[in-house]
Image (cartoon, rainbow, N blue to C red):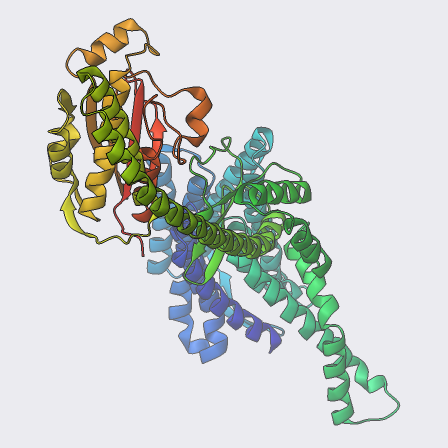
Length: 623
């Protein structure tokens, strides 16, 4: 009989949905209680159908399975209080379990009813006095659970919590649907002259209950619902076409089957679009939309422009403010902190390329979330394009830099060769001059020689020879060359690095020489006399280090005159110097050494010091 097949399917479906809830128990409050309640519903349905499956001799077992209904109602009541966050205290929940448990035990000890045969259903259980009393228990618990749901529904509506309101409304609707389906048993028990058709809708009870809860908490449930709805509609369509085939002027099973297949194939697209609109209201995305998004994002050639353009497009589509963040190599140095509650689309590289994740979308309806997921695929494509473009631009800049360095190296070698002989002649020519003149000429000759050596070192190609070293030990050695240098607590322990020791020593020497030259030109007071006095009370130069999760930071600070504003933007370019007698190549060489190690050097603020250079050494060496 059709009704027994439907009820058997409902038992299997309910158990599967209970397993699904257990798999995602961390996503929904009270999911384990709901899974236990659905298991109780399955036992109750098995008790009703067991005599029809195996015969009336199974009546004792069937009656005891039906006796579990009050305890299942206690589980439902407890679920409602947890799901709706209604605190009844320990005694309130304990009273519900006591009522349901006692009614179940009494029904199992004393037979709650007997079987009768119905013309449409077959064997059906009818309650005796004990069963009627036990039924009052589960009716009371059921009404209590529904009352909790209605109270929470009104509270969610007043607070404006749309997601909670929709979830509670789905649970409430499933309860009303369940009562409507159970009316089929009432039709049979009262022996009304109509078919108990409401029982045919019982499989939808657990489906509405579980999907209504998971719809906003487990987004993949919507994808499954869309597929299931498509298949259901196509099967219903095929059944309608099959029912209409007898109206054809000829009779042929082959042609009938062909008509069904042709109808299903022809209407497959429209049916899918209908299912899309039903499951994702407001989330329809066409091929034209995807093309328009791709075209709009083509104009973004930087990560910042891409994130801004993507946030604007998605925000306009769903009608709310959205933040788009790019991770990995395109992440900004100082990421902005979005306002609290703002949904975010985060795009980052992964093993399979760029991928997007949604953060802060828990309260969003499925439609906008579906739009955001599809939009994320377009953003991932654009991010991959921007990354490739930046990599190409970086390679081109490196090629141009190497070409300029090669030209500069050839020029420097020529200049160095041509200038050394005149310098030697000048030095010898003033040998008989007064001491002050000799000293002045010697200083200028040394300055020109230093400039020549720096120029040669900066311009010539060189390759790192990295090995394991202790940065703290190298700093302590370099600090001995400059008097009055203090070392911070960060240098008291080893700082292991994989780097070229000769180039690291060169960078440290250049920075310490830079500090010495700056101090020789006189101290300034960018932070006030008291601060500078405090900084220089022990030493005018201070070196310290700190370790983060992925880098070692080395700070070299001094209390010199500071860096003029006009050269801050080009401080690490060749021939930019903060000291009157500097060559302007020392900091450029430091920047080149740090870049070769995959790190960087930056001018930072660390009061009370007027100047502080921070070296950033990555713990993972560059490839």
